[in-house]
Image 1 (tube, helix red, strand yellow):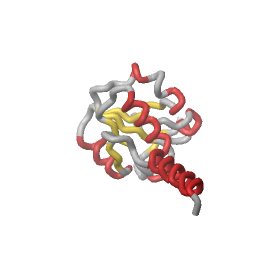
Image 2 (tube, helix red, strand yellow):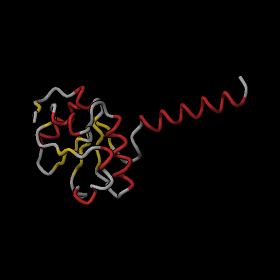
Image 3 (tube, helix red, strand yellow):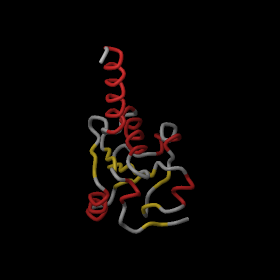
Length: 126
């Protein structure tokens, strides 16, 4: 293998890992762990970063819909003093949202891996 091929492969591996792994300081939890956390105490906020039509098709009770493309401009309306759980269809977009919020100074962030595809709890449809 020549050096260019190795460099390209290394770039793709780094890119994939950067996209999959949550940013430092963001906790990755399962949908089952989110269900348990929801039972424990109040004061949590769930942000569903899917598009509005996906959200209307079924979302977690109490979740706010802020699509990923709007998350940065909506940070003023998200409380920094609360645990913030980010959910999407699979965990990819919520990981991206976590990166954005982390850069904006949020510290108590949870990325729900598996997202709505793995969610077994009740959903609300609008």
